[in-house]
Image (tube, rainbow, N blue to C red; front, side, top):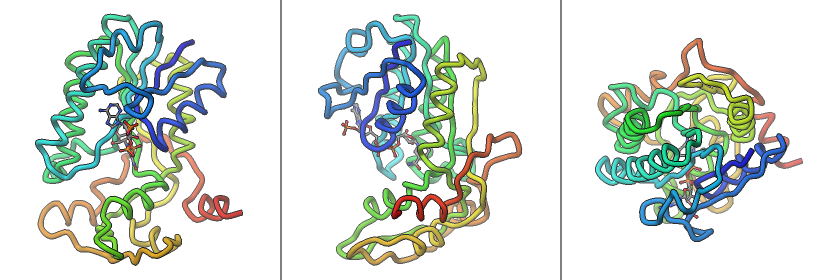
Length: 245
Ligand SMILES: NC(=O)c1ccc[n+]([C@@H]2O[C@H](COP(=O)([O-])OP(=O)(O)OC[C@H]3O[C@@H](n4cnc5c(N)ncnc54)[C@H](OP(=O)(O)O)[C@@H]3O)[C@@H](O)[C@H]2O)c1
């Protein structure tokens, strides 16, 4: 089975490793490999793929920018998957479509992305995961202001990216036909507790209380999975210990 993984960085590489471990031939494409999903001919670049896994991302809290990026990426890959007769597997986020979190521009963009995929991809599986253990570091990098970094109040059920990649790979090879699959980690914690447990070089993390409805939703568990989510370990502290051993 030939799998094209669109998106670079930490998630793209983890997904490639997981699908290759199941005997697939995998190609990762992103701007760093010479493929821009917003500009280039996706059908030509992905010719021969049986499955297209979409794991592109651009961090912004601006609703317009997030929506333009995520829907642009998905429209291109939906059309390519339709023309090539390939399955489209979209990586998304548990509860990003809930009304109370739409004030967060990134989630509004992810919601528009899911809608665009549902409208245009004939053979689609949306795999939603909770925030990854790796999100602690991603957040610190994204929210850096000088030597400090802001950590928003969020109650989450974090999951290891490697475990998410493994479920994605199972979905790919087992040809599961579920329209939506949700994956979560085994414990409920906060982004601040996770951040405190990890080390961050010279960056000083600072907790931030997001005001209003969105902040309440984040703190009160709007991002926690429902009972139908597939729960996969390890717990954050065990994962962290394994990273440093
Ligand atoms: N982080 C989490 O905790 C989490 C949890 C659940 C779901 N997700 C979802 O998983 C996906 C990947 O997340 P991530 O955190 O790995 O994102 P990320 O760190 O922002 O990486 C996404 C990758 O997309 C590639 N990319 C950006 N613009 C592109 C373009 N125009 N054309 C082709 N590739 C492009 C980038 O590689 P290049 O720079 O080489 O182009 C980048 O490495 C996102 O949709 C995100 O919402 C993330």
